[in-house]
Image (cartoon, rainbow, N blue to C red; front, side):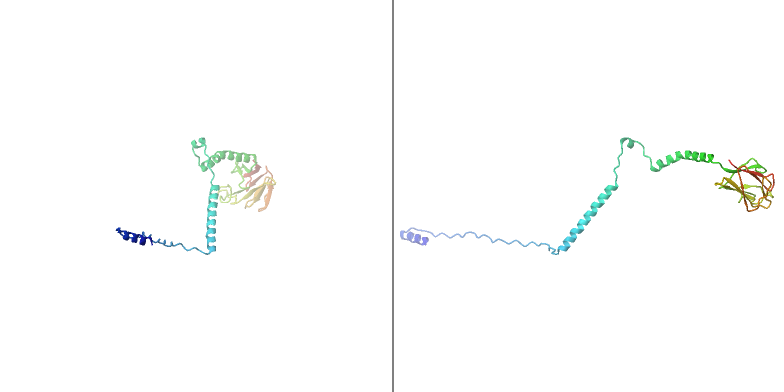
Length: 223
């Protein structure tokens, strides 16, 4: 080796020398392997993953549908400057005002129609109801002493008049009156013919009859 040769030369020539210490190079530390990181277990079942994905998609569709329906139900309210300054009117007030204004006109129209239509009435010619015009109630009128039954009520002192003496009806189709007796002392036509109890007799407007006494005369007419 070269070191040994140099050492022999130095010794032969008497040159002092000193053997230097051999310096060892530093040893690099061994690399430390990183610790393994724990990872969550992977679900190896593809069916479960598809189930989660499907449920999520359905939920998303429901949310979108709810938003669309809510948006359609709400209509934008447009308020102009003029309407914003005017006082608000409640729906109930808005509906009641025209109805209240129309009531007198409607009542007047009904009254006018009734006036144009002739009314079936009986008129007192002589006796207790002389000069009075009595309108038929629901197409009929009962003469007698019982106020619970009759509309033309005689006083209780009129003993010749029965509690339910006779009934006058009006036929809309034929425009004739029907007179039916139900008394004890009789109902008579102007010709003094006595009516058979329970049997209706037809009268034309302008015909007359009397009850029990010839002084108690009535006339049927269209007023």
